[in-house]
Amino acid sequence: MRSLSPVGSAPPERRLLDRVRSAIFVRHYSRRTEEAYIYWIKRYVRFHGVRHPRELGRREVERFLSHLATDARVSASTQNQALSALLFLYREVIGEPLDWLDNVVRAKRPARLPVVLSRDEVKLVLGCLTGTAHLMVTVLYGTGMRLAECVSLRIKDIDFDGNQILVRDGKGGKDRVTMLPQSVKKDLTAHLERVQGIYRLDLVRGAGGVELPQAFGRKAPNAEREWCWFWVFPATRQYLDVMTGQRRRHHIDESVLQRAVKRAMSDSGIPKRASCHTFRHSFATHLLEAGYDIRTVQELLGHREVSTTMIYTHVLNRGGKGVRSPVDSL
Image 1 (cartoon, rainbow, N blue to C red):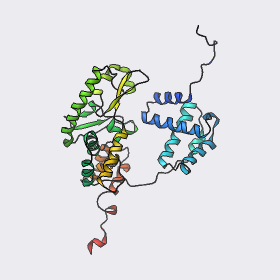
Image 2: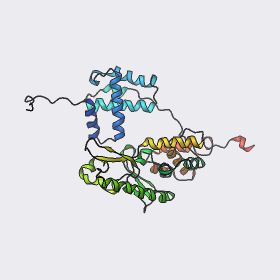
Image 3: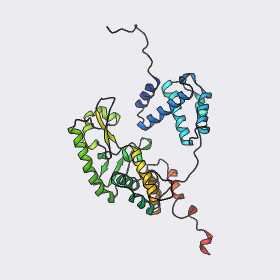
Image 4: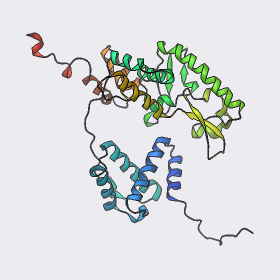
């Protein structure tokens, strides 16, 4: 016989991380934000001997942030991400408005110029890539998308007739439109024909489709098995969704392309420390070199402020700040 709880007794308090996930879900934060916040909260709690955050205060937060900077030697952006996670924990989850957190000094990110590949270097790297990796890097360079935006593309986001790609839920939760390069259309069409074969095989095997955005998934649960919602770059394997108990297919993991680009950079012999994001930097720089308006480039990149896009004017192929050296006139 099932035991009953006494009338009026409070239900057991949910585990801290479950409460964090619920708070993130309600606010419609991205999965990447959830993963980052969970990681830093776990690390913060373990750093202080698995004590509950309610027992910790300003001194413990500052000790943890100092540890990240001095012992772990993390970057300024990483330290600020950890601070954001702790701000969310105390304000939104625990419900303790700690005013002193507003006075914790955020680390300043150093002003560094982005690594940019020349057009010839981009061709060289692409020549070291094959298959899906080649197509994805071509899309990154040809559209200026971020890696996370590229891997999460869905079939419905590509408009072949309109020569454009709709980037949904980009950084900051914003949608934007970028171009679909003409030179990519043929290879992308052939790729999608192969992807449709994977999609149909999943349906035959009774797979549960793909993950949908939270709100839409509740309104149209059957849409998860529709072709328009399938991934442009699906993963090679399915996974078991612990929430639904269904076999599903996610998009390709970012690390797959990151490793491919790292190998291609090594094979190319280019003496630059480049990554997938380098092709976004190169896209913007080469557009400005071609004479396109900086406001247009800003919209294509999805920058909130034009000052963010201005950094590419400092890496144009015109020497230091575009100034002609006097030695060239001798």
